[in-house]
Image 1 (cartoon, rainbow, N blue to C red):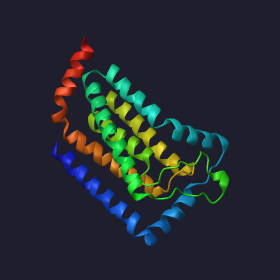
Image 2: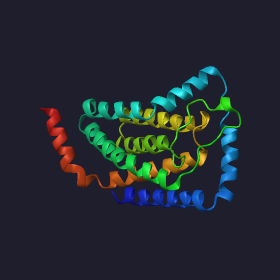
Image 3: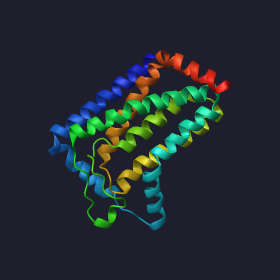
Image 4: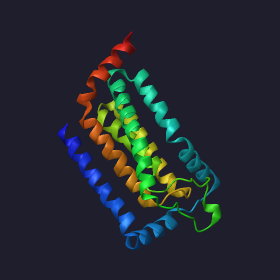
Length: 214
């Protein structure tokens, strides 16, 4: 499990560097970030735009709550342990991500044209993206835990869903690209550290598995 600690520390270090640049070096980093946002925030077609809106509305809470529940109920021993790791990771990240958002307090982007904002503007700050934090953490946990052929199909499906949700946040005009990079680093870094510490949670997983078999 040491490799997960190493990966987690590296991802956290990258997040701290990026967050520091966003806070203290805005003149050099925000220009390219703004231009990347303008290049990506170009809704094209009613069907694609509706898909992106649905992903941004339902791709975080609804999909990942359902995925965690299904893994626990239908996933056997591996699925129950994975569901437990997901629950622990999300429980850590929700208050952590909120606290970091409040501390950094980066304003939300303003699309070049009003019609390019496809969802109501959120009132909280922009960095890091809460959607990217949660879905990247979820995808990291499932990919790390599922290695068999049938399991990999589930893991890859959830990875694709996570990537689409992350992209949708710029498409709909809710985040700058670096908000998504920061959220992904924070989410995956936390997930990696939780996986590396799973031996400390083993009694909880064993109890849940015993209860589920009754």
